Length: 277
Image (cartoon, rainbow, N blue to C red):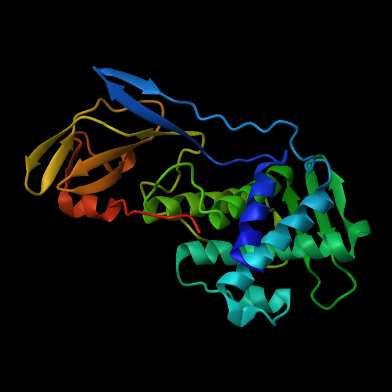
């Protein structure tokens, strides 16, 4: 499988009617003292009908994810799915999240392909217990967990986080998505890893996030600046700051009451030029 196939599959999921439970990113601009908030709405005319066919949608999703794994980790191509899951890298938080979500999807895929009659869907909860092999795989997952799982892979594989974000932002979003999935799985073959964001992102708001493209700020010294915008009381905000020929995307969560940030701290949120794979 190659990158063209991956892109086509991502586009396929975007054109489907499967729910996307990613956080809503609203760009904000300021002109003549007036702020404008843009609500980015994605719509698809005549979306591909996948939401009513759980077996098909999960099978296609696994095809995408496994192709991506083969592309990124060619040394794992000849391994079975279970061994791939064991051998996926686990050093960074994003890697650990992907590894665990791959393991979850593997069990769901096997149920769909080999044991469809053992799948039980009741009160928006999917249950499965494998009884024919030595693995004894099992899973109980709520409907929203399947939605989050689809969202996780669509966003991570497509490197699509709603706007241009730093690698730290992407890690925070990825870990938050993973925990949404984990919280929706009351029972699984094994204990899923405990992967958390550091504070102040441990209990991140997951509804709307503002992306302020031209906020007012003042240089305090050669090594600090102050964001002078009045903090938004309803939604967390990322402030795009152009300072000393660099761009920084400062999350409101790390700001103190004074909203002064040192250059040393800002460098942790430096925005690099990125491209989508």
